[in-house]
Length: 214
Ligand SMILES: [Ca+2]
Image (tube, rainbow, N blue to C red; front, side, top):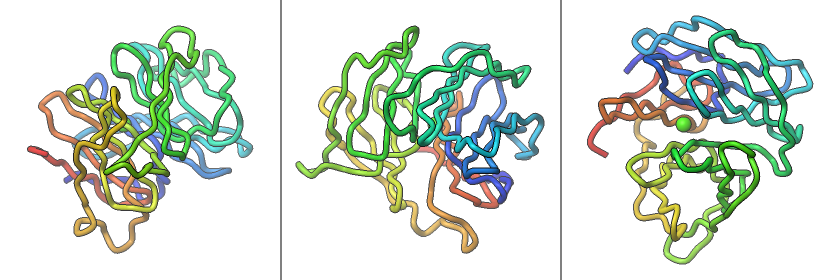
């Protein structure tokens, strides 16, 4: 495990170019960070205005991050190396989580629906309802694309769902209840490393777990 800023109300989590990137929410405390993957040290940070509640993000390309807001109907395009906001997009849903599959962006809005957006235009091109044994799975939150499946934190649970983007069916899930630190909030944050391990944390957790062989 590696240290994690317990002041971060984690919303988005992704590894890119050897760094662990994170977005943190709450009004008045929202930020986007570049952190050291081995020490958890915050190396650079973009702070948002008090009126913005930052949510999940994903890399669009090496120099562009798309970051959602919760209820501000805005997605920001950010240069992660300069921490400058390059553009704003209109977001017609609540923003919760987002990941880049290489073919499209998958986005959650707190419901059981995943929307698929065109990477270039941000337009919704498809959607799928996520079910487990036929039951809709609400509160889909932070996302990560791994080997053809979309992994999702499910707000209010300690589960990571493994979702088929084709059928929307939860193929399996893991429960991380036993690893939640006493001082931590809900599990949220999944980032795939190049070696196949998953970096997982939670809101205000003091640690990030490194999980393999899931
Ligand atoms: Ca992620």
